[in-house]
Length: 326
Picture 1 (cartoon, rainbow, N blue to C red):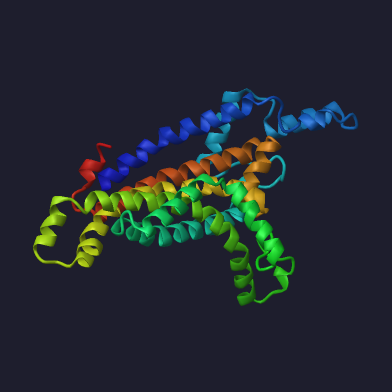
Picture 2 (picture 1 turned 45 degrees about the horizontal axis):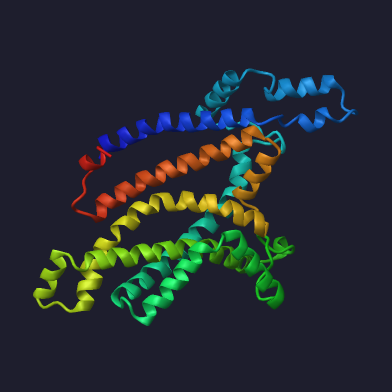
């Protein structure tokens, strides 16, 4: 296992360097920079603009700026946000908790519903349950997240049952601890439904196909021949093997949700990383964008690594030697 971990961590280094360099290059190809609007302001002297360019390193060649940024990252310094004038690391840290809570809650919601529903439709193939739930799954996959978010916000506005956007209420600071927790949960319900529904639909279809494929396998027929009940066969033998792809997907699910959360946060005005990244891209805040890209890349790679370790733990047919050849 130690050799496997060392090899995977070493393989991450060129991937991180390559992805961040391409992102840095793309940001440099965008017309203008963070100071473009200031240059068009006649009240700001050119000397002030030149001073700010030197302060932020915008007057230096691309390769030199990237090398300096990468060297700073090695010292856990992601630079200074051009727009907010604070550390990128502290800025991302202040927003990360909201996005991680939203993404994890959405993933738990999606998986908690997708797996039992997938079992139901697979064990009742071609029944009314199969047709109705499969239709709902296709509907969930086809409706864009932003449109579903608008529908739920309209529902909240008409009924008053849920807050219409936002991360917390205006009087959040004056609430006691339990009231703050309840307020946060109340503001999370609609975003979790929006993010979780699309993931739940695809996961349910995957679970259905996995069970339909595995329940006719030779080892399942052997279990039935031994006199085991259908319930034991499905839940003890079929379901355990059907969950293996889900373990692998878990490594990508969180990073995917973090990407999907960006649009939902923008539509529902949630103070998370998605809205922060959107503002950074619009203002060409290159160091804040790079910090967000770096965090997403590391999350994806670590998630994939943890998923591989979990797969070895749950599936005796897989070992670290076979993982090393992937």
